[in-house]
Length: 317
Image (cartoon, rainbow, N blue to C red; front, side, top):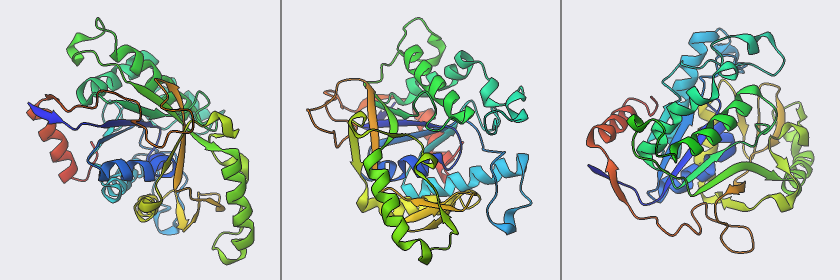
């Protein structure tokens, strides 16, 4: 048996690049402290729009494989050793934007049976035994079907992982102490776009995005937790640059395939939706208030070796 690290964080995202945009600074910060950071990505993003002309030939399967390679490089930049694909790479395909014919593909993540998909995640939860889970809100931040489904699967898996009688073959039950949803305070987003307006003429982007283009913007009181990743600015920007098919970075700004500039946030924000809130103000640590962060000898040597091998080969599996 190999001892698990004392602090363990699990993030569930829909596509490669979502993790760097939403949580790159948080992931880099905790990885640097020696915490176990595990990322589960639900699709390969085969339907993403490609930005660089030199990569415009990529689509479908080839784009999905390329985006997994980008994800591996992003994880290297963040110092994250454990990144996985839900159910294995390619099990669930990108669903495309809401309302498009791609939503009807029987292999797309949007059409997946939630309990079946959640069972794949239960296996990960019971293996790595995270104290904290981070995922999207019920709207997926901005209504993308894969983001909505990632929320459903993550929340369902958290419940099932704690049930002693569910799939005992997947390991011993585990209850996640705290669950957070990604958020951005409205005042922070507004201030960021106000600064952007003053420098837009100096950027390689033709126009600015709007507040509606930023996922997870909520009124300030909804936000319970903020993680200051300012000292991980270089790591977050590098991880976003690694996703070159999807993101163009001009620090401290970036744009997606629409080439509309938006702020690159180094303080990342969350809403605690399950678990005990620490203190009366905003938390500054996702693990705050968790009384038992002791290391545990529950990782089998074979499982640890598998992760180590995956990291050596590029960081995803």
